[in-house]
Length: 432
Image 1 (cartoon, rainbow, N blue to C red):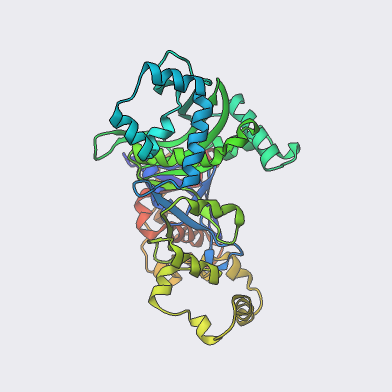
Image 2 (cartoon, one colour; image 1 turned 60 degrees about the vertical axis):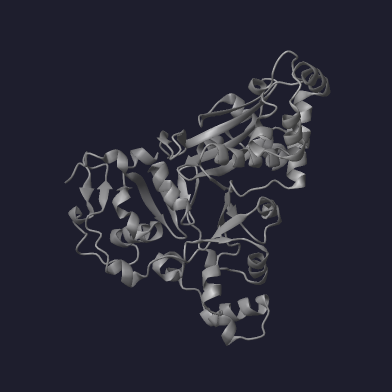
């Protein structure tokens, strides 16, 4: 048995299985940063890593470098139009008379679009008074806790925008999805000396005192990760989704997080095309786990192939295509399906038979020493090692369904180099 003094260091995870899924009871922001950089995402406390190679709709991780981002004309117009609405023509004229800008300030505003300055421009605390603006607009970063005010916006958004029936919308669902995060809330100091908040938060937008939109964010050491964005139908005409994305990019820039992660990207899904309107976007290679610029040339590859690993494209031609030259994508998919033959139940469920990108092989995992893995259980008040399990030395990783194989799958899906950061959590009470 062992009781580490640095128990807060661990991220507590319980394995579920293929494609891959796990439940997180407690995660450090730094650990979750490593996971999102390995194709993982979360929904509440559920962590998942898709198998892009064998998915009908492959999911890819995107990120944008806020320092390189330049808003396009449509994005600039959306910001300016909303700002004019909030401030109002009367305020603009009177403020210009009372607080005339210098010639240099006027020239700079007319010729440059400073995203951070424009995004914060209409906020009540940034407007000089008198006079008063047409509307009071505030944005606050708040803990991701449940309130009736937040749930009201969620209910309206799901019912009106997503057209979900009322019986499918519930307070429990809202809390589980958007208020129940495993991320520990903490703060850190960046290289520039500024303090940054880490953890899960709600970025709340209020117009004249009423909550009208909310961004659910994971603030991690190197990124602002967008979990969800919702808004009330009353502000639909102002393109709130676009304004929310731009504000999150501004937060990444001014807060020192640098990158904005917009969530998974599905190339053949029309509803996700908007994500590449914010450029330059970089896509995470599922095999090399490296970032590639998602430029026009890369997008052509995504247009032509069902599954894409740009590192593989650079290294060699597709061996399957070399076996079936001249076939289009649909014909190629049919040939690949035929070559695989019938369904193999074990292949569908056992991670090491799934041909999942970026996963160590069964042979590599069998050579890995997992004896020192830290575990917790309802049957002990202490931490203990995997080697303390009675069945540990009698089971084989290759025996699908055994406890040892399930632990090996989780380690493989996370990455063997992260073994020292995790505690495999079998406590039922902590996952309820």
